[in-house]
Length: 88
Image 1 (tube, rainbow, N blue to C red):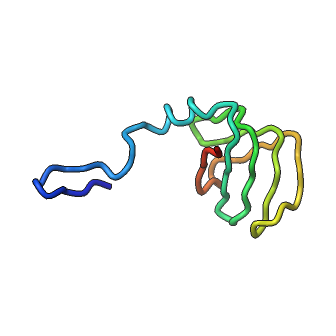
Image 2: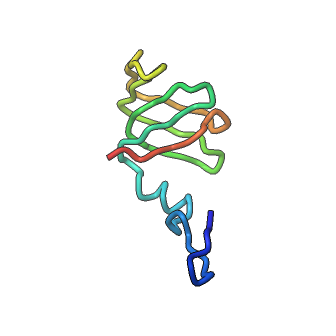
Image 3: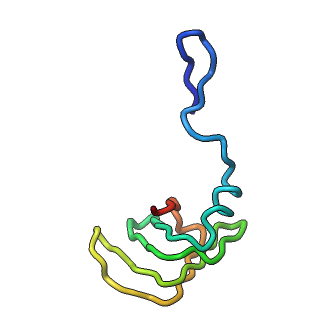
């Protein structure tokens, strides 16, 4: 979203990176994927395609903030993804 400053010029509220460059930068990095159901998966991003299908390794499943399971590999169908967040 863009806002106008005191001079009337447009100021961007977020960075100008496009989604594909963001995904390229976080490949192999730890991420959090939140599903529409509210369940979160935390793991290392191995791949993502144009449909937002996601493959993770060394993954933990969180339900209501509590860790429920650990998985070696996880495949998440893209239509279930609410957001992807890079972990620090």
